[in-house]
Length: 255
Image 1 (cartoon, rainbow, N blue to C red):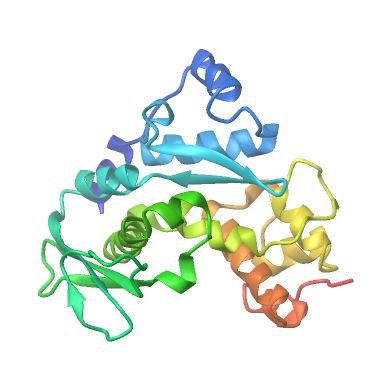
Image 2: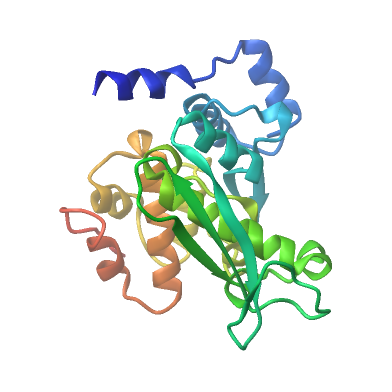
């Protein structure tokens, strides 16, 4: 346990007030004070460098998110001391036949990557379906095979290193989800994008706090991620009380 704590602490990054001010003006210039605080906390915990584009802030539809690049994923895995490379990427079409290079003009149906971690008998594989992650943006249209393989690698790395990468996502993974989110209606503290989003489906701040058993100021990145997942379920038709009750032991308050 001691070695584990030392390893986690060793990668933490310290930011000076000058660094924070520069990040606020450049990397996260659209962030509210609350979003900037969360962004800095995640950057510090992961030890990633915002100026090297390893971690960055994006805002879509008024909702701010902290995401990391594929280089950030790889760096965190390497720092664990357990990363031993990967197999792939491989791509397949509708026929399900995997290839180590994609030469067709049309996008692949899926991509997969296997991560080799020390102490594991077999690689940990992850598959990304193109239809599930394609956001229809120019970069997805121009380089569909590359984008799909990046998502597959992120999925595989997070599966292989859950302690280090839990709750962390790349832009490539989030684009499709963000394109499905309707504009939020403000409710509760204005600087919190999660509160804004849930207001649009009739859920109060008290309901969100009850659902995860913690006050807003104490929400961890993993809890915020759980709330985003619950929001997607609600938007897909799951009753709000059912989606939120699954997150914690306290029954949520729903308008």
